[in-house]
Image (cartoon, rainbow, N blue to C red; front, top):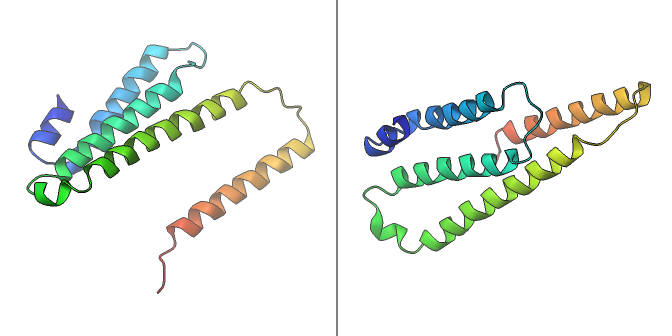
Length: 129
């Protein structure tokens, strides 16, 4: 209902909320059970819903400009959804690996966390021309 309202009234600031509610409902359905093997597919579906909703708002009043880019944008959304399913599947498969504990494993985890923060910081830094 909220997703429909945010698309009909073109309110892009409301779009993340229905997607978050859908993700929360999926999580609630899982309960205390284990990890669902279909989680990457649900993630790809939620990404697709969000992208299509934003795209439908973006296209309002600009149908002349959109004719040339429709196929390219649809292919991009499909590629993003497929990539999210693949990456989610890889992460899901990685969670089933048995990793020995110890100081070396802890140091590797800290190094990976620092590297991830460095990547996020470099992407967040404004570009200078």
